[in-house]
Image 1: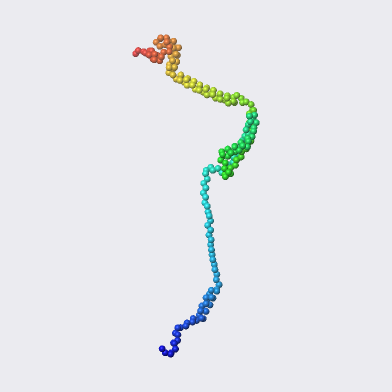
Image 2: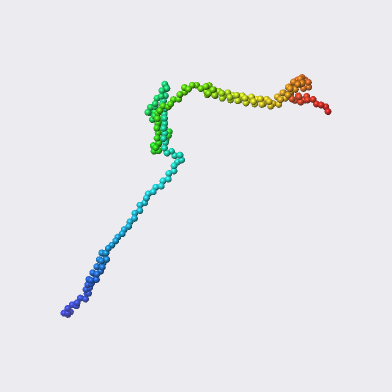
Length: 205
């Protein structure tokens, strides 16, 4: 131990230069404060919905029906015409709808009308008898019977004319009429062909 004072502190004290830091801050401020331009592009694509439909129509497909029906008046026992009632007309219309296959979706139309028909005038007089149907039927029946009878008579005549016995009898009758005697001078006519062949005279050689 001595009475000498303590030695001085050797730790260095460093202070950065202030001028260099100020220059760097000024350079960064100058670079950030310059003019700037910003551009942004955006594209939006929207998908379009598309529907493809294939429809195959039947052959002879009915597009629309338009039907009109006229119903005659009913006739009373005394001959006078009488229109149908509303209930009867509704029944006829319903029946017609079922028969035609009425469809409102298809746009069909139906009209039922009750109207009297024109009566035909049959007071023109009676037809002559040769124009009446009864006479025509009788004439056709008689013609058929005459045709059948004529055909049968012709067949019988042809059959008789083509028989050999009839031809031989006819020739024998002619010989008897010419000579007045049958074969072998027996005085008989109309002998059979076999007898005539047996009685044929022969000459001796």
